[in-house]
Image 1 (spheres, rainbow, N blue to C red):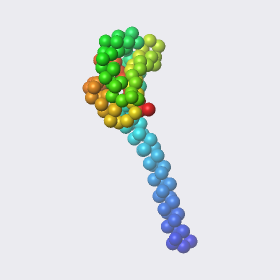
Image 2 (image 1 turned 30 degrees about the vertical axis):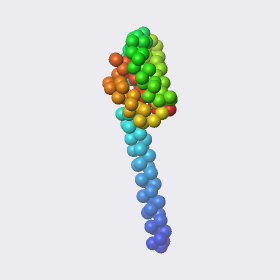
Image 3 (image 1 turned 90 degrees about the vertical axis):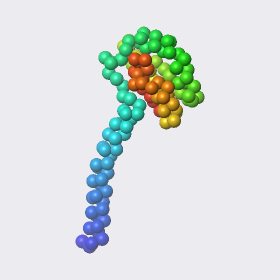
Image 4 (image 1 turned 135 degrees about the horizontal axis):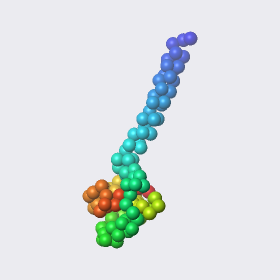
Length: 120
């Protein structure tokens, strides 16, 4: 074997090992970043009952309107993910809009109701 084919083989092995390592690292990095930025779904036990969610939304409709007015693509919806339990889902389009929404809410929950931000 000449030096050129050994070098080519060594480069291919290094590339294959790098890809094998970087794919899982990238995937779990993405999951970690997504959970930090947008929040992960909470367990059913951690969610308030749907009536509580509806009351909070009704009582704070003015803030919901402000959130929805940050961009034409923003919408806030009640999500009954578990039987009788709910959360808020806030759809947005760009990171600047997400930052404006987070500034308006300025808490980890919307008056005690968990929310998730979803980029559409």
